[in-house]
Length: 542
Ligand SMILES: Nc1ncnc2c1ncn2[C@@H]1O[C@H](COP(=O)(O)OP(=O)(O)OP(=O)(O)O)[C@@H](O)[C@H]1O
Ligand SMILES: [Mg+2]
Image 1 (spheres, rainbow, N blue to C red):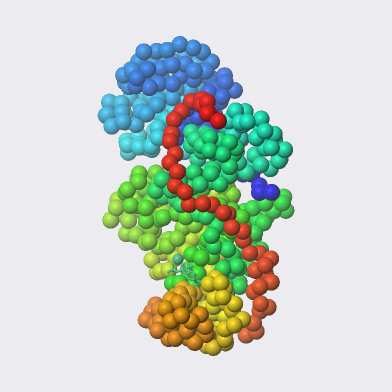
Image 2 (image 1 turned 90 degrees about the vertical axis):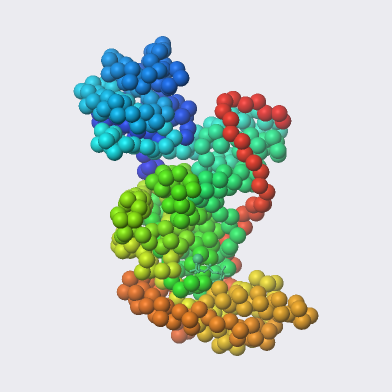
């Protein structure tokens, strides 16, 4: 059983703390206005506070502990109304951020922040984006990035739909105590409207909750955000050759996210950084961990955080963290880390400090996160990485992936021959190992693929001679990049742990632990269905 996240405070609790601590002006970011207001309504009922919600089209409306409307559509008048209000109250201003451009509104808000502190009233600006003008930064003492729906909320939504499913389906689902848990898990990371949509689509198509349909829809939705990719477990752990130390480390932690591990007193693993020579299997390992730990893998495109194509960089990193935390326990894989964060040091001069701010919030999260999100970062160029990243406490371990040694190459060759459906025992592995000194795993794979083409062309089958000949044709990167690789090794000698030991004696054959620890395929298809968004109760045509 995977532990539910119990240490993480919910946004509702966070907001309650802020209200109790007399924060008078709070900014809440969420795309889910209805859901957030519903949580606030509950909170106000519990705390016996009046809740008034404002919008430019309707003015104020009391939605908890009272009733009535107030026809104040003008933003300035709305603020006056808040200041004049009596008793304990929470005021929510929907989509107020465009008015934060008006100097008079900003001034009035700043005054209001000071005034309200002396009362039992708090003011929330609720918006899908965080846009705070610098003049207000000091007055808005807190920004709450509202959580995505948790397991309980998602289950409620699933059960509502289930009530409309055919009786036979309901019975089948109710008989399996873990089924609902999987249905809920499959939808984590989506907004409530998206959850309802994917469930509804599954019901209409398959007349039940079909996990593949739900996961496939979720993959599409996450991809559409433009930042993250929900990764299928295509690579298995047994596809990774060599790197015994790294693999042992990962195997040792495969149950570290369970409730048993928490009870035992283990800390949550934070993350690891894989650096090293190109083509040595860093990305491959990251993907394989998902299968080994049976945890969903989210791949982050760091470049896109800063690309300016989707949202602002700050908004983007928050979205990524929020999604990863909602899906947790999950792995957040940041490939080619240096591509996003290399400009941190010069950020003040080049981009007004954006890169270093975004990097700063990422680092803080990495160090302080209480949610079971394991970060795997991979990088090639250590010299481009900001030194703060390498400080103790950021990652649990930094591994250096060097070129494979003899034993490692033997495993890698074996893996790639087998992946082509051939029997490795029919090949002279010793000769192949000798011929591939200084070849990376990627180059070995490249040689196998080239030899397959040759064999197909000449009408032979893949064999040792064919492989030896394609190996000869490849000039390994290690030859052209000798100096860079040496510099990297020197760097790593004191700062990182070797992913593989240069061992004199061969370890027992890989096959044993491969059979034991090899991952499982998830079996997702590659359909690309559309998803549509709409609100409200729905009646399905089943
Ligand atoms: N240790 C290995 N075992 C098996 N195959 C490997 C190994 N290393 C590399 N390969 C093969 O090479 C391909 C490319 O490797 P991968 O992308 O993981 O390298 P990388 O270290 O991430 O390189 P880069 O630094 O260029 O990103 C893999 O998909 C795999 O087929
Ligand atoms: Mg890579």
